[in-house]
Image 1 (cartoon, rainbow, N blue to C red):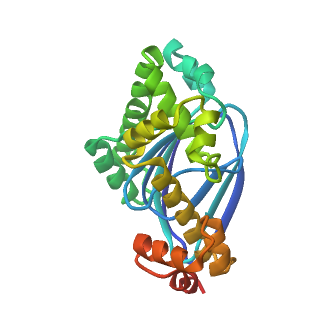
Image 2 (cartoon, helix red, strand yellow):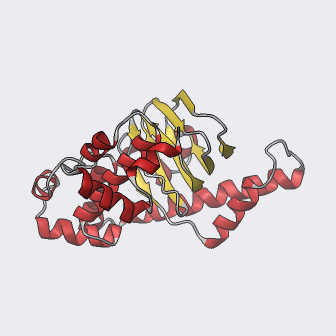
Length: 264
């Protein structure tokens, strides 16, 4: 099933639903939204297209929270366990991936073009050519999202496994309040290996990536108008509000107070 979301939020929105087991291929094109499965936030970037695969081994609670004035343009393809079990290769993924296991995948330029065309097509359209394009898009998403995963399942190097463990741990939020030494110990690797993997995965040292994650969380909390600037500073791991304001402005181009006032 392919879900098409081209949403402009006039009001603050919160949705909850129960999702059945399966693999979800998410192609998030643009926007700002907080999506969670069983409370685990999905790392959906707003400045560039993001492609994720998430495995629901069992039924999971879905949450979507969006602020007034924001938008979301995304496509989500759900592959059921019954469909995956029709092939031994895809059936193996059901055993290899843990519940809420996350994987990134790289959409091609052609797929991004197909996605933009689909998102600009009214959802009510149901003529033959529209259905054909939708089916072609779904097959392309499945191919680009699953084939690399199937290849790495066959030839999974030690370093690739380490990178996946790092991704699952960090993007699941488990490392937000931990030191590098604690993270390295949890993942059973040295700090130098941890830093090398972070540079390969994120293109930056892990401390910088974690600091960016905390600032992003503080920014979301400020825009939701439920926290003060001092509380946001604490959430971002800063004891000094001035240092927090400097880092915040360097990252987002506005002050924490301006971010908070935007949503009033």
